[in-house]
Image 1 (spheres, one colour):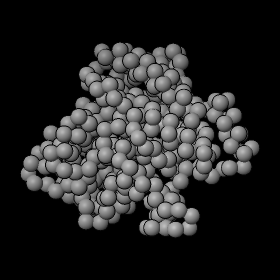
Image 2 (cartoon, helix red, strand yellow):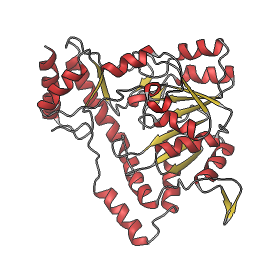
Image 3 (cartoon, rainbow, N blue to C red):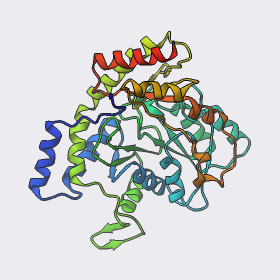
Image 4 (tube, rainbow, N blue to C red):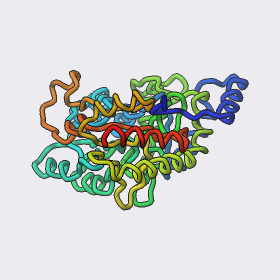
Amino acid sequence: MIPIADPTIGAEEKRRVEAVLDSGMLAEGEVVDAFEASFADYCGTDFGLATTNGTTALHAALVGLGIGPGDRVLTTPFSFIATANAARLAGAAVDFVDVDPRTYNVDPDALEARLRDGDRVDAVVAVHLYGLPADVGRLSELADEYDFRLLEDAAQAHGASYDGRRVGSFGDAACFSFYPTKNMTTGEGGMILTDDDAVAERARRFVDHGRTSGYEHESVGHNFRMTNVAAAIGRAQLERLPAFVEARRRNAAALTERLADVPDVTTPVEPEGYEHVYHQYTVRVPNRDSLREHLSNRGVGTGVYYPVPIHRQPAYDDVSGSYPVAEACADEVLSLPVHPGLDESDLDRILEATAGAIA
């Protein structure tokens, strides 16, 4: 079976983990500090703050931005549920904005229409879904005009760029995930980026029990700290990220070229000025479930991200609203393998199986 994801862990990752184990300094320390600095430098921000996972990064970032009870957060209904859960965990009310059918990201026109109608919003969480940047140019302009905080959920977009600038550097803050299936991993882990020292300080306190120094705690917080063990893997993975991105883009280009003439298959878009990093290579097909079964029978793993929009989850029964584009996407999207572990024969097999099912 060709897997939908295949984390790449090599000798350098193992060497660095062994060095941490030999040092005896397993919890947060200098290795985490170095990873935070190098990841912030890679994305072009002043501050990086490592956390236990992408969800805790989102939660802590919202707290750092001052979002809490009485505030209202808008985000996409077409994402992993952690995007919305983090806002609720911070105490804010959550509502949704429909997505663009081509990019699967928040539709800036739909958001602007809501804002012009007087919809109150304190923060927008924009997801760079599947590795394609959201329209952060428009969203940043709207944030300035309507005075809301912009948080980038870049959990799937390590190394992606918009207008020549890496994602993670546009919003008031940004968050990444280092789950094993992501474009780079720490095993589990997350990262907050920001240029705002006050946001960074509030988030850092929240991640570390509200600690200011020693055993002095100014506020209530969690233990969301990353370990040196995880950061050691992350430092090695960050050095390899450009090669990972290049491989994903190369594989995606091959898939797009050969699927272009296959009827009823809509391949991913990459608008001018955007650089997609293909955490997922996601197509739209009207017969998604039958195609998925066909591919599985021929040894090709697939994924559906995401079959149920967040507003249709039982946890969000109290949120009203209609989001027809997100609902249509959820019925038709199918992700094909695109990871760096694929070789030419794997790509041939994926393409032949896909074309054979639809021809």
